[in-house]
Length: 424
Ligand code: GDP
Image (tube, rainbow, N blue to C red):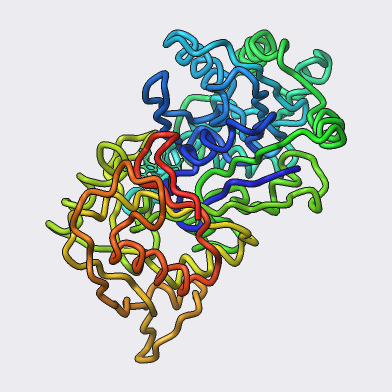
C-alpha cells in the first residue's frame, strides 16, 4: 500500500507533521522530489526539528527512510542532517539513497547565487540551494548520478567536460573565477565516501516491499501551486510537486498509489515571488504571521518571513484536484482561534468577471479576491480530539471549506504535535 502526502498550496502546509504522524503506521518513507531548498518542521518527543532532506519518518526506529531518484541530493546537507538528529538523541535512522539520484554540486549553488544576483530586483526569490541549476543540468543530461561515483574513469573524463561548459558562463556572464576539474573530482570523491554505505537500487527495493505488503509513504515537498507544469509558472520550483510524480521520483508503478493525502492550511502563506491573490498586508498579516505555524511563519530554510493571506478556496480546490486528492488534512486550524471573523477568498475577479476556476499566470496576476466573512469561534481549540467537541463555528468553518474545495477533509490538525489530530 502506497500513500502520498503532498501540499495543496504554496508549501509549508504542515506536510512534515502529517508525514511524521502517519509514519507511525508505515514501514518506508520516501522523498521523491525537491532538495534542501525547503524545510519541514516537526515537533515530537525528541524535540523540534527542521528537516530539509531527510524524510519526516526518520524519528521512528521501525521505519526506513529513502532518498528517491527524483530528489536533488545535496550529500553534505544530508550528512549534517543525519548527524544533527543523532546528536540530539534520535536513534541512527535506517537510510537508503537511490543509485539513480543525482547530486547537487557546489557549482549548482554558485550558479544559483550568481543568477539571483544578476536578476537583482527581478529574482525568483530562490533559496540559493542550487535546485534550478541542478534540475536544468539533469535534463540537459550533464548531471552527476550517484551510480557514476563508482566509475572513476567516467568521472575523470566528465569533470573536464563539465568544467569547460560551466567556465564559459562563470567567466563571461557572471565574471567569477573558473572551476578546476581536480577540485570537482575531489568533491565527487568526498561524496562517494559519505554516501557509499547507503546506496541502493531503490526501485527494486520498493518493488519487493510493496509485494510483501509493506506500507510506503511518499513525502512531497512544496505544493501544487509550485509545480512547474500546473503551478504559477515561472514562479515555481524545478521538480514536480504532484503525487503523480511520486511514481517516477521513487520508481514505483503509478497504480500502487492508493491514497493521496493533500495537506492544506486553514489560512495561506507563501515564500518567494509570484501571484498570491488572497495575500494580506500590514498589521493583520503581522498578527497572523506571529501566531502562525508553531512559533511564527518564518521559512524553515531561510528564516525569512512568509507572505501571509486568508484561505483561498479557488487555489486550494485547484491544488487538491491536480493532486488527485483522496483525503484532505486541514492543518493549523488552532491558529485562527484569535479571530472574531475569518475572511476566506471564494472567487477571483479578473477584468470585471468573477471566476472560481484557477487561471494561468498572466490572468492570475490580474485577479482580485472576492471575500466571504465567516464567524470565528474565538476560543482555544488545542487538545480537542473529537470533531463534535469543536465549537460550532469552527466546525462550520471546516465544513464550508470542505464544500468549497470539493474533497473530503478527513483529518483536522489543531496543534503541531503528533497527537494534535482529529479524525473525521
Ligand atoms: P511543510 O513544509 O509542509 O512540512 O510545513 P512547515 O513545516 O514548513 O510548516 C508547518 C508549520 O506549522 C511547522 O512549524 C509545524 O510545526 C506547524 N504545524 C503543523 N501543523 C500544525 C497545527 O495544526 N497547528 C499549529 N499551531 N502548528 C502546526
